[in-house]
Image (cartoon, rainbow, N blue to C red; front, side):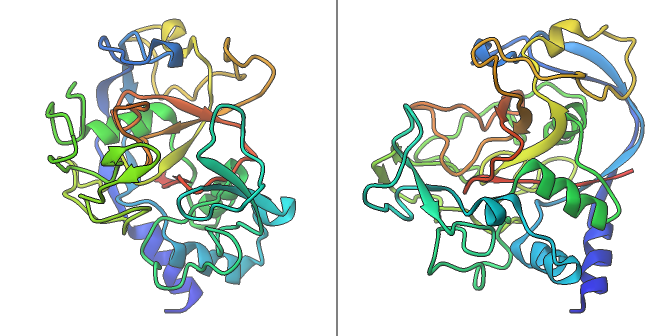
Length: 299
């Protein structure tokens, strides 16, 4: 498939969501430190969101067409889950010993040198920064979703279920999405069939037809992360909220961060409940990692 065809196909891989009343946040926060609540009523215009995360093949077409260099490529290294490339003596972030800093880990070598995206063409592209995701979205004729657009699509509409499939909790035997089964981070039963990422259209879609809104990879949103954002929204009177004007995290006040949503293949209830629709997480915009990807909005 030629590059222009790939771009057109991705731009058309959208589900249109009718505008109307919705809400954001939750009255049932699990991680209060992430600012998951309270619930706020909002108004949304009609928008289109890609039914799947951007794949390796789609990002490869973008790079071939534009010559784009990702932040990880320019920086020269990125973090990799140690179970996929445990480099002896490599740096690890404080308190996160399951991450390994690997020289040469980029979108096309996601585990580091010797790895490749070939053969996992339909998996989500990873090692992608916020700027990288924004650049692809512009190339495809769109943009990144706002946090409230992402959340509305993940819920499958204005309902309040905890997960895209309903209220049933996933566990080591009940599989709804690609998360960690077993004892994190040392033992994964692979009950869902995947140790790392899976193809973007694996598992059943939600009520609106979106695949893997939770699990598999965290997804970049356009918003700055602000712990107080939901508290400050004027409930019922805000249309198409675009997110806060600046980043604010009382637990890490010196780093500007953007919102990521949805959890990843590394989540389980031992330490991370990120696969809930209301879960909020954040990351510095220049950070790419092995469990973060994105999808795009078509205005």
